[in-house]
Image (cartoon, rainbow, N blue to C red; front, side):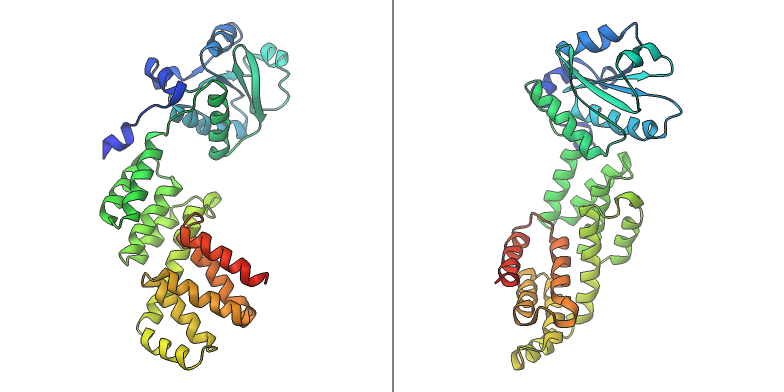
Length: 317
């Protein structure tokens, strides 16, 4: 498993650069005297990101570790140079730095992009991808991203043991990785360990509690609990629905039981049927439950996509 985290193939032009320089060469501090060599000259080879910061700046402390990680994950597609504005006031004035953190990207000796203020990791990845494309290549996936792909593939194939082992290894390197925490929770849910799944979700930082990976796992727990309550009554619920198609309470419970038992399409069909016959029933409970189904399956799941189209057709017909 260590090979999944430590290995990986560099991609594009950035990969070639990564082969020539280690992670220690990708991030460095500089000053006014070395600015030309470290930024302008270096940018003739790969884009150079310049982070203007100060020790007293809270947002700088927030941005610093994130941008350093994003640059290292790009594996040579870009470099990062950090400049303390307190120690380089003349340079900061020349660059017209009025607020920090201020980030400028240089390529071929000139500024090409930039932003001011702390940014989330997702925005930084997009920023770096734009720079890599500008330089004629793209950063390859990081070892963590590759490991996540392996884990998700194993989980999708039903190999929960392999998936949980990879997710666990990722968490050793990045304890707050929300995709890995959500993945571990989903592994636990798949084998019926709902309490353990809740423990993993409890480790998610509050700021990322609504991340799709976490929201999906949370929805799966709620659906599993509801499904467990109705599972023993499936036969009775089917009989009630057959006898009275407008017994929405029975149809709703049957949808939960089917979804929790693995018949996701069957569960979706019953909820859509409730919405078709009486969308306002129980304060739109069927539509709200269907949204939970979508969260649990994920936004790109084929059943989510097709069911959303069917829902739209019903609502706007």
